Image 1 (cartoon, rainbow, N blue to C red):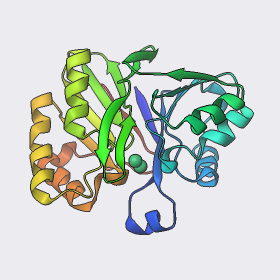
Image 2: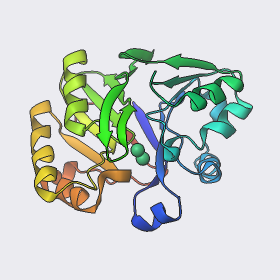
Image 3: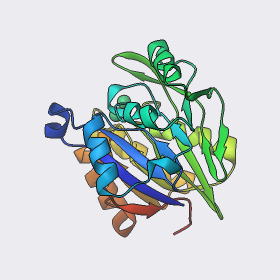
Image 4: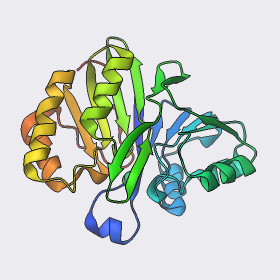
Length: 240
Ligand SMILES: [Fe+2]
Ligand SMILES: [Fe+2]
């Protein structure tokens, strides 16, 4: 399945400038996260000729600001879509989404979004700010699974563990923010090492993965490390 990186921030400078966050188009009709700056998001939508009128599903990974800013211009214009959030997401966010007259779907458990695309359902993570709730996407194509993460606050390894226990198969490709940037090098190496046990063959680390972890991914995965830039399209869910 085609996954397009619409917008992404990953450097310290981008974070300072609030050009931060992530957003993907999955196929032609699923948006996964909507970046932290609505103007940048809409600029890139136009630049990459993304047809928002085809979008039927918007899945929000978690309620951090850098994943939701582009949602508002989308649902301001397009009403024929459903927005998927975890039950523990911020109540004001859920109320605001409803106020636009779009369908709001809460996802405590794994659920089919549309053929071949599932959410993991809400998983629990921890950060210095306290408990966080986040969902990731699972793409099933042919033989293997692909996993797309927003920030991976519940820990990348725990997300993959949940995917494997709920979906059964190996996970061939992972793409997204892996939130390894604040971990020490030892922990980062341990997490990268354990990915092979889930069957991970190729990786596209983005956003909050962090510079050291990205280098490690490059070293460990070699040609199967995918450097994705805004506007790039990759196949997720197919065995490489
Ligand atoms: Fe983030
Ligand atoms: Fe986050």
